[in-house]
Image (cartoon, rainbow, N blue to C red; front, side, top):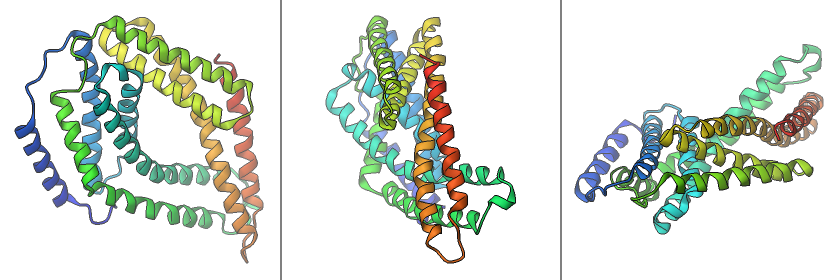
Length: 305
């Protein structure tokens, strides 16, 4: 699936990383219970990233799970950034953002292909004018194919291999303040909650899709912060926050999906309308459907305040 990146490369890369871990691993620092909880949360995400990397090199497709692990790790570095070595955290955040962006280009095509196919299936045949399914398939494949090639190239790059090697070192010795207290983590998490609440309120008072997208990202960071607090202390309050921000993230995620989908459908409809043997009518129906879903998402989000 990912071209030249195969099992042989995976074994070679794993051997290289193992050598680095053995030869360069520092003596682990003694961590307080709160610092150990953060380290454990990081390790879960790092292991998921390693699993995703190995899966991709075996021609599997664990893109979604890999991106989620990267998001959780990036969120931890953002929300609790003052508790990390700044240089190490900033460098890792840049690398993770870069790689997640490449995976996202592939994932977007996968999501849209399923979304559009399901939407077309709900329409009566009389409203499906022209080779609608073929255009959806071919147009998205034309975007996905080079996106996959970019992922393949990135995985073989020195930058990606260095990032993975650094993550392996983090498992042994995270660049983390060793004597954190739960009160410090709670304070950082509460800041993330307040930011998420502010952004949602601001977004709902506007008619700006970009602000809703920012609110969604803030809600994700708040959710992941609450997850970390829950994992470390078992706080029932943090558990409630996880559920609250997960609901907000889901609704705003559905809204963002409609924004992306509507833009793609508009392009497809315009292309179909100027191509012999095709018709943009059905794409207009699908576009209107996305607009309706967007309105419903905004209403649902307003009820979550």
